[in-house]
Amino acid sequence: MTTAIDMGKNNSDVGKVRNHGFSLVEILIVMFIIIVVAAMGIPKLTTMTGNLRTRGDARDLNAAIVLAKMRAASDFARVRVYADLSANTFRIEELESGSTAWKINGCPNSCIGDQLLSRGVSFGYGSLTTPPNGVATLTQAPLCLQNDLVATYANTACIMFNSRGVPVDSTWTPTPSDALYVTDGKSVSGVTLSATGLTRIWRSDANTATWNEH
Image (cartoon, rainbow, N blue to C red):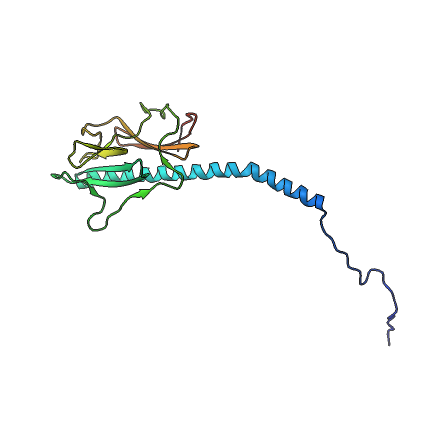
């Protein structure tokens, strides 16, 4: 059985190609929507990124403080977290019994040097004047002692523990509270230390004291 094929059949839908595109007005509308969404989202994204950085640095400071406390008790030595407020760095230092020279953590075998704060983050607490709950005053820890154990370094802050792991000030007297704060200009994160050695991590806006514990 043979089927005839009509080669002359003219199907109006065959061979036709339609080019679909967008008009200039449609493109402009889409671009406008993208710009509006970006304008709304970028500031929030920037704020969120800054919060993550300050919180991350506060957690790192908290870890250093906890380690310094344990090191002081285990080595029966004076240990401190040394913060350089100008360079935005911090490190752990140890003062061995009978010595007046502070030694960087791990030296001389495996020195653990300065740790730098995240990009855009510095030590400080913005324009805030109100401290977190349970803290007497809003201030950084006391200035760090030099090797003579009398003079201090400018633009520094040290959280220090005696050989029993008790927080002390620059006169070696137990201190009721100490703290280190960092900010990116929009938010402030800080670590506070009680007389018992308990650490707490806080966050607030940089312009209005809205402290929340994390």
